[in-house]
Each structure stands twice: as structure tokens, then as C-alpha cells.
Length: 492
Picture 1 (tube, rainbow, N blue to C red):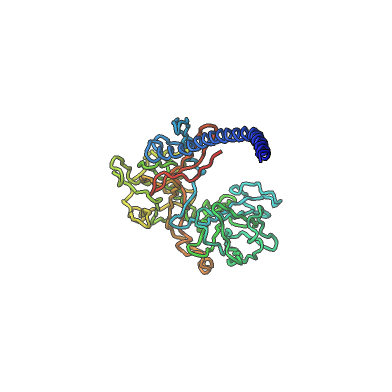
Picture 2: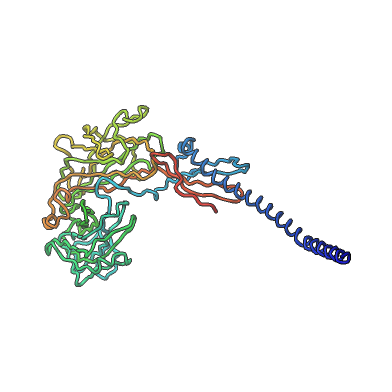
């Protein structure tokens, strides 16, 4: 029995030695692992602090836009304000940059025809050799063998992309001739294969051709998309100026019209087009409207007679952008601002926004007070001409242009684009076949429309937050309900 106990004590000694040996090989790695974990945790915590500081920088920028002076200090495209702040014990540089480039202007939903805009250009070949490098406004009186290459564009200018185009019409100038069999439609850039496969028909006459492409199914566009096609016509019109018109038949009203476009002049003769109507253009004196600040804008309207005869203009309607107010004398919104009365003059040359003065009142007379109404949140201004209206001499003659100058005020609370629309009612004679097709009416054909133009931009703001080698970058807008909002944010 004693011997057995001695052997057991010997075995216990062996076991203890084994345990000590194993412990010596495991304790050190375990301690090293613990140390590595602690170090990693410290690094991770530091990285998180830096990232939190970067994110907090964006919140600081939003605060500056919402409650600070950033929106009043930044007044031009590309201007920046820089703040250095300490966040989570980390120095962070916050940069706020005004983003007010004219390229940011994008028409939103408007009052009338602002969806798919049709227009056309023209190039000429005097000797019929297929090289279209001649000035279409300076062609000789003899048109034998001359060719005009028309390019028709369809441009989706607004976010209202849910209404498709079902048919395209092109009204050639009187006397111009085109045969699809001799000259098929060509979509040079491949953007309009649907119209290449459609067989057009002439719904007009031999002398006044109106070509119709009836599409097999509606064509839809994404915002900003442009489709185009070309065809060549023989020039055989009378001396003088000739106009082309493009019409789109839409799934829902209103249909779209380019108005007179793609001008060709043969010889001397008349300056105006047959049933040319008027050309309405509009300009505004500044691009930016700063958030929460009242600004008075000066608009100048040109109405040019394109008709070969005297033009009688009875009424002009201007539709201000959402939130804009017509003003005359003291403004409706800010008693500290005053506005000039609306003015007009009839002159030889239209207002040039590059060389003309928005502030000059020389030669103007005071307009009668307009009729002002609120239609779906947009102010509509209707002017009737003094007495029986305005009379413009035939195109190219003296006093063939009406210019109107007026002012409007705006106190914006939401980033975005704000466009104006202009309508001019005149009398002319519309082709009966186009009326029968339902693509236009007598009033619509003769009216002049400016499309959404003279854009004013309430800017957005680029934000950068730089800290600890990490940069956060995003974009913020001013929103009507919630003030400044971050619309994008990423870390790199």
C-alpha cells in the first residue's frame, strides 16, 4: 500500500510538470492576442472618431445653411466659405460651395407646352452637290438645283415624361418639294430608328406640303433626351424669306408646335414668311435668386413680326414662375423694395441681352395696368395693347418689334429652376388639313409661344468635410418644408 501511494505521488509530479510546460507555451500568445486586440480597438475607435467628425462636419454645414449666414454670404456660382471646427477632439475643415451654374437650369413642370419641344434647323447647298455649307439666308434668286437639308429635333425638356409622341408633322415652305422615295429620312446619329421605318404621307398639297409620320406606337423620352432626323428638299419657293414648322401630336393635350423655324431666304423680296406670325423671346437680368431673400427681377420681352404684312397684336400673356409676384411700385411681399411700372416701346430692333441695358428706360412709355390672376400657384399677367392694340409693320420694316419691360419679385424657399412662359395672340391663317388632323387649332397655330425660358436658379450647395485624411462630400438643397437638406453624402 505504501509503495502504491509513492508511485501516485510520482505521477502527480509528472502531471504538474506537463501542465507547467503547456502553460509556458500558451500564456504568452494569449497575452499577445489580448494586447493586439486592445491596440486594434484603439485604432478602430480612432477611425470611428474621425469618421464621426467628418459626418458631424456635414451636420455643421447644414446648420450653417439653415440658421447661419451661408446663404446670404454666398452670392455667385463657385463662391465658398470655409470653417475650421473641433469635433470629437478632431480638427475638421468644412467647405460650403454655392452651385449656381447656368448648366444646372432644368425646366420643371410648367403651365403649358413644356414637355417634348420640336424645332428644326436648315443647311443649304446652292449647287446641289450635297455639300451643305452655304448661307441659307443669302441665296440667289434663281433656285434651280438648290437643296435644303432640314434637321428636325425632338427634345424632352421637362420631367413630365409620361406623355408619348404619336405622330410628327413637318410643314415645308410654300413651293419647296420633297419626295420620300428619292430621299428617305435619315437619323444620322441613330437616335430615331422609329421614324426611319415609318412611311410618311403628304396631307397637304403639291405646293404646300405637310408631311406626316404616323408612329406605330407612342415614343417616350427621358428628361433631356434629344431625338433627331434629317431630310432634303428642293428649294423652289418665291423670293423672300421662308419658314418651316414642326408639329407633334401627343397622347394627351396639349399638342406641341415649333412655330416658325429654319429660315431660308431666296434673293431679296419680302423679309417675312407667309403666315409667319411673331417670334416671342424673353430675358431676365440675373440668374440667381438667393434663399429667403427678396429679389426684384427685370424681364424684357421681344415680340418680332415675322409676317409679310402688318401684324395686329391684341393681347400678351405672361406666366410667371411659381412663387414670383408681379410688382408695380411698392412690392406685394417686401415693403422695403419698389418696382418700376411696366413699360413698352415699338422699335426697329429687338432687345439684345448681351449689348442691351436692363436698367435703361429710354424710349419707353407706360403700359396700361394688366389683368393679374393666380392660376394654380402661378401669376398670370395679361396686357391688352393701348387703344385697339399694337400694330407692327411688316417684317424687316421700321417699327416691326414690340418690347415690353416689367419687374417681378421673388422670395425663394426652395432650390430649383424657375422658368417663365410667354404667349402672344395674333391673327393669321392656319392650314385646314392640320386643323382637321387635330394637331392644332387656328388660335394655337397663330399664337406665339416662348417655351420655358429666362430661367432663374435657386442654387444648391456642395459640401466637403475634411478631417484625419478622410473627406466626406455631398450636396444640399434648400427645401420648402424642412429647410436645408443633405441629398447625397459619401466618404472617401
